[in-house]
Length: 122
Image 1 (cartoon, one colour):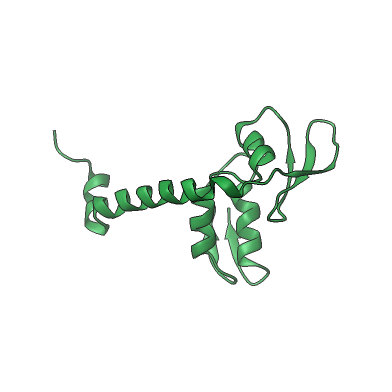
Image 2: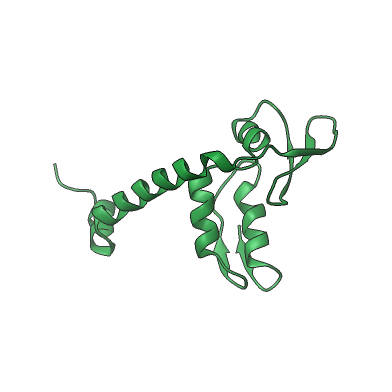
């Protein structure tokens, strides 16, 4: 069975070793960030969701049943390694494409990173 066209194209663009290296760096970074977690602070009670502020001053309406919500409530952050990598690369004035779903964790973070000069394409 031959390789898929997508895999062949990916191999042309970058080596699989590079991708594996990024994953390994994310795991190491995640391990280092374990001790820095701070719970989100409740600001306002709502009907279905409550307004919380994270340690990095991001605001979210969260409930206690969602996976992403629980993580932000307990740790103040979602996917710490991925969050750190995004913060490392996205700068003021950048134009970014946000292809995601759920409560908008990355959209809120990206809006703070690109500032008024930048653009987020949803």
